[in-house]
Image 1 (tube, rainbow, N blue to C red):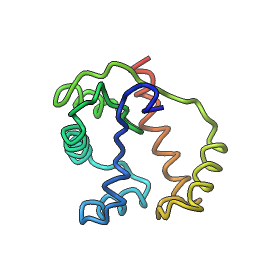
Image 2: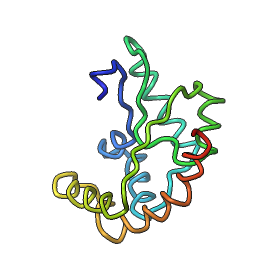
Image 3: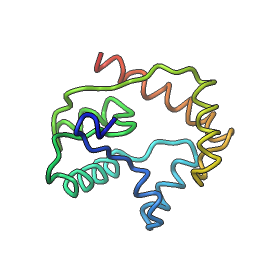
Length: 134
């Protein structure tokens, strides 16, 4: 999608995959099924956007915002949000896709127990976001 729309995709997964100390801390948070603290997410996004600013016509930020406060703080600190893209998918389908991703991702949080926790967190925090941006 990014190449079709001339948008650059940004994902915190890049930091996790880097093996940095911050990446390891992010992994521990995600393995517990919790959300990464807002200040950390904003720092990651700002750093990634600055690195990719040259030649960009915009950004597609994967999995963000996950809470209403994240969206509000992002708009205050970085830039206004123009669009939210949301795909409505059942928990069963999401679980199946994440387990399939686990076959090649090497992500420690792609397992049944953590996925269940993450889905609970997703519903608690993301559904208000969907309503706020609808």
